[in-house]
Amino acid sequence: MRMKKPPRAGVWRKLMALVCAAGMLQGWALPAHAGGTVVLYTLDGLENMYRDVLPAFERAQQVKVNIVTAGGGDVVNRANVEKNSPKADVLVTLPPFVQQAAGLGLLQPYQGANHAGVPAEAKARDGAWSTLMNNYFSFAVNPNITPHAPRTFADLLGPEYAGRLAYSNPLTAGDGMAVIILTTQLMGEGPAFDYLQKLEHNVKFHTRGTGYLDVLLSRNEIAVANGDVQMDLDDAANGGLSIKPVFLSVAAHEPPATLSLPYTIALVKGGPNAANGKKLIDYLLSRDVQARMGDYFGIPGRADVPLTGKNSAAIRSAIAGVRVVPVDWDQVLAKKPAWTARWKSQVIGHSDKPLEVVKPK
Figure 1 (cartoon, one colour):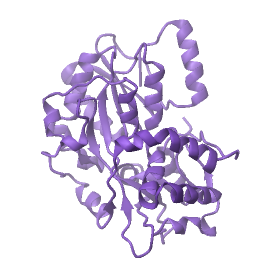
Figure 2 (spheres, one colour; figure 1 turned 180 degrees about the vertical axis):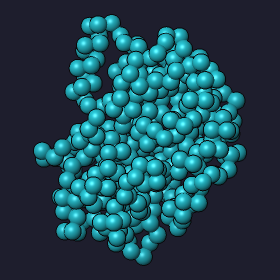
Figure 3 (cartoon, one colour; figure 1 turned 90 degrees about the vertical axis):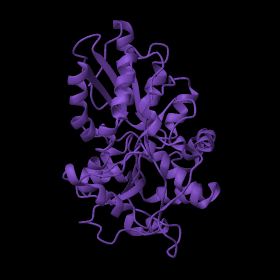
Figure 4 (cartoon, one colour; figure 1 turned 30 degrees about the vertical axis):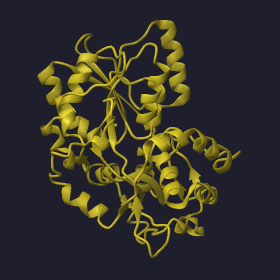
């Protein structure tokens, strides 16, 4: 949730040094044949969906899909590093990173026939990006270890969670940034950062991406982590992990709250295989593929495709009674630089707490 045509030797060495230092790639493979490839940069969480739906596309189009997987912010940062010589054709990430990518001039507006089914509020007005799969932010616990899950944000400040919490780095992971977004939406900016500062006393570390946290929860190395509904349910059902999504409220008498955190898809500006990139986007937004989103614990990005499939009931059950907080993503994008600076100074401060914890290869 593997990859691309190598640049010239000197650039390759510099790029690989940068990548290794950042620790951002989970997979790397060279394309099988030039001219018949498309390079997809994607955040983690959609591995099972890609595994199941991409072979049909590859057979029909005689195109090999090469995938680079990293955190939602990492894939955008990588695309920005390569801006003058793009290596990716298609980008899949989360808000507000997709809006950041558009603002950096990394995306090429594209609206195929299948984009019409995506509601106006779920895609960019200029066609720069579109929702691929709807999803929701959540926290997660190991139900075998934590049968009585926390119910409020204040619960996480208790001594029983000292050194037993983790959430992904907001600088590199969309789900990590969502921790800041949701708390500021619910509490207000000042109180939210005061809360996150207090919460940090119980935080064990921050991971570069979010996917590895499910593994750590299942191993009982931590008790609570951030995540999202689609990834957590999928990891529990198909990954053999003991995890369960939970939602928190600001006060015990209030309903739990979340925010929509959709997977978005976009065409990379100047990508080496733009025609194949458009074909891939059209395919993933096709009615047939969208109708399968429920199988992977996601909700179709297209409003004209109903939520169906073997796991649709589990999705509805997971989010029943949870309030969805509206988010102005343009405002979030404007606030993001100040928020990340404040998180680094006020929350993580001068601690030696790890920020780059990644899943072993």
